[in-house]
Length: 322
Image (cartoon, rainbow, N blue to C red):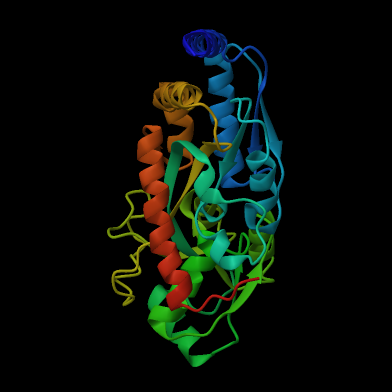
């Protein structure tokens, strides 16, 4: 028995030492970040900025791969089933990490099992309408929607995205009835808004601002507690009569389930340094994105809270499962 215990102890010591050596050498080959939205969207843009900085810090290529569809579920599933060795990560918007289990009946992954690495950025949502929409103010928009139930349609980046759920919440609190037109990402949704094929969208500020400034679409209100410095003349939805209406979105990096904690912590620290660099902060500032960062524990707590908030919206607004 003593010989057996000694053998087990030696095996554990060897394994620990070998694993420690692996951690010291990590990464020794390219890292892949799966982005679960199409190229050109907010998550994709931020991820490419971060990937470029991360590549410089770790001395290995960081490859961004877009695998979009099904509200982010296709990319999330690919990352979920990848080897938990730190060489495959997922960059995602809220839905596949929070509420998709409430919106899709047959998911092949459990978002609660991902290992959160960090929250990259956060950004406010705004009420954006097509350039020729008849309402010129947020108050007029609310009145128009109430007077025309079922005649105002709204685009979203897909089922379960914050653009979808924010509109569902808006319907609930204002007593309006809108028609949902889901798209596969930001770019196609905004293209149809610009072309006046859809009436409005709750869109994150980074993607909406240039369209507003170029008069290709109009921001009527911001879904924040206070006015945004870049848009001092645009009221909050609260000011427009939709009381205490606040909505924002974010994007995160997570790792497959059972990825070793040491690797998760290392990645979080490296990405945190990237986000704090003046070059990256300058690029994100131009996109009106706010750097989040934080530890894996911070990211886990943040995602858990967001799941609770938007899960409540889904239930109260009776958003149907697909």
